[in-house]
Image 1 (tube, rainbow, N blue to C red):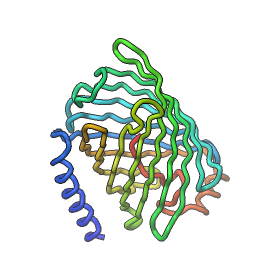
Image 2: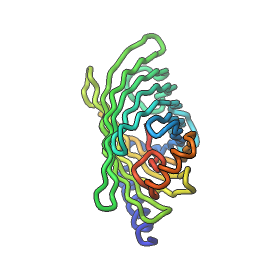
Image 3: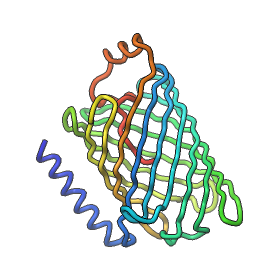
Image 4: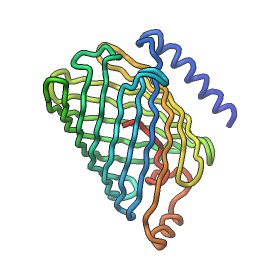
Length: 249
């Protein structure tokens, strides 16, 4: 266990060092909360809050608020419809277009899950309708996203989470961005986890290095009969919503 954690830390240090050679020179941070609130065996409400800083504790870049309603077709297939609000200040990033943006976002997604050996895979397909309010104009854009995520439990407490996600526009330049992520997570108790990770966010003309610190807190509003059924059929860090790892949105 100790060797696995040391190897993970060494990997992160080398990865960040190499990334900083070709990216912009500010190491930012994303502070994240996510929650899954079970209403029944089939339905749940998701909640996400993210504060994205251009530097680790300075210069607010993005505030993201997101919620969605999920329907569990079975333990391996989950569909979600949701809404997100973003307040964006891109003046620090030297990206084209206006600096101040308010975005209202509607999205639909499907998540497919499976297990191979100790590895837990999730394929997430998302379609977004983005309503952008710039300083002097408004625009509507459409985007698709695909994320492959792999989670590996180290023991009953610690796990490693990695993913790669590509964003494709349905207008103008097809390529929007790509996110590569790796993190070490710790299960605090049955309903909450913390995660410490590193994100490489690649755009066409620039790349950003971001630390991520996140906490997930899940709640359960099902009756005792439903809870007893789930308790008998679930284990630590399984693929159901109660043990879903934290990711950026």
